[in-house]
Length: 377
Ligand SMILES: Cc1ncc(COP(=O)(O)O)c(C=O)c1O
Image 1: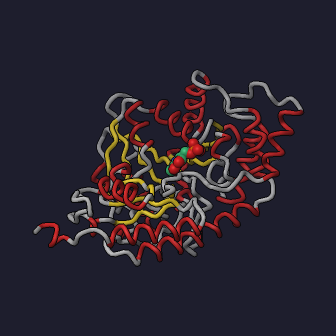
Image 2: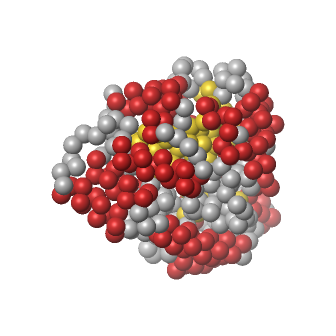
Image 3: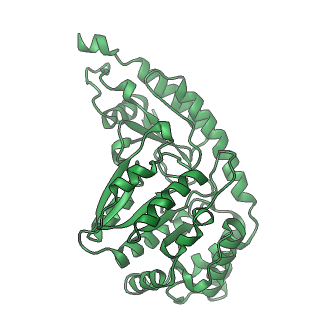
């Protein structure tokens, strides 16, 4: 039985041709040398224009830097600002690199668990309780990986109030999945709600997810000048500027034809509907439609305590994920990996045919589990 891989964290689409051609043209014209550490002036200007056009943010190019993926932007930020023992508040479930990057840089992640009833977003009092005099950052990821949480104006306003009371805390706003949105609400930027906090906010974005460019390794950040300068200094002595060819391709991505972005979002929306309705029909799985990003984070508490036909009791989401892999041939990721159990993360970066096949296989595998009472007997 071929394995259906629903663990994928990157678009299954190919990079659009115009972007590839821009990369090829850069090679041909000899754009193959070191670039400024913070990125080429042309790309930073395109990022400045993007932030203005799509987010109504006004950053001069000195406050914008480019790196090898958003991942390196985030790493630079923590490396530049964390001292031993400083704390970073991270809502759970989270993208696992956030806490690991904090730890690598001597910091301590402090988690704020969330619940599906609030669409996996933390309420402001819970965030405030997690803040101490040692807190350096709050991390918000909207839309979020893995739960698809999208923050609205009221939530941002409440969190902004908390930040105003704790001036030592910076906000890292990861917007990598910005364009994969399913809800019809108008897009609101944190900095439109709280422009007074601009000198404490790092906006993180990139081309990986929006333009199917994960392998090009290109991300960017915009923030207060001293922070961006410190991050650039870190990058100067680690990797230098991002690849010149990738920067030329990213310029085309941001400044060229944008039709791919809407087409991809429409495809993810169809897949989300197929996956959510397929999972909703399965006894033991509890699913709500995510508002954004390309994952579904489904509860599996209803499977726990049940026993497999081979006689193994499912005790955790890790057991459930193992069972789906070995019995149904469907690969998924356990909630434990994202700091909130018991859940299973399913990716939407696969075709609807794969989603339908996966749902049918999972349905059969779950139906084959012994019910709790029999298992206990
Ligand atoms: C929430 C989030 N932020 C950042 C990244 C890193 O993206 P990249 O380094 O490819 O730009 C990822 C990738 O999976 C992600 O899920």
